[in-house]
Image 1 (tube, one colour):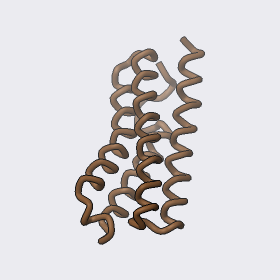
Image 2 (cartoon, helix red, strand yellow):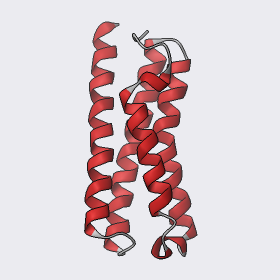
Image 3 (cartoon, one colour):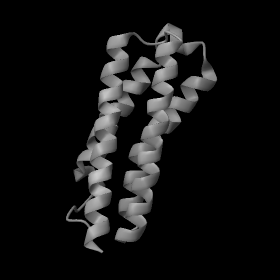
Image 4 (cartoon, one colour):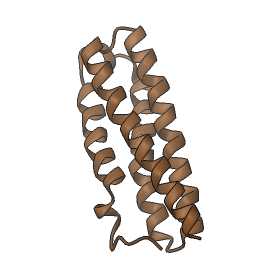
Length: 122
């Protein structure tokens, strides 16, 4: 298992927690608010990142943890795709898009590194 005592210590989880809040706040704006299905979907995908990191950690085996980290990484990809649509529909401005895209891309890279580390360890 990893060197962490709790999932709260994991950098990618910490960053995804911050990212979740930003997604929730940005989807409260009037442009987003009228698109209920999209708001629910992007929020669910964002929450899936941090939730899968936590769930995988609690499984107590590297093999299962890696599986859930892959699921979290896939959710990060889903959110990235949704951010492009939000930008194309003008639900978010360029600065918001770039900030959110950079954050979720960083989380994805952290997850990739963590997956590689845990995979080599076992």
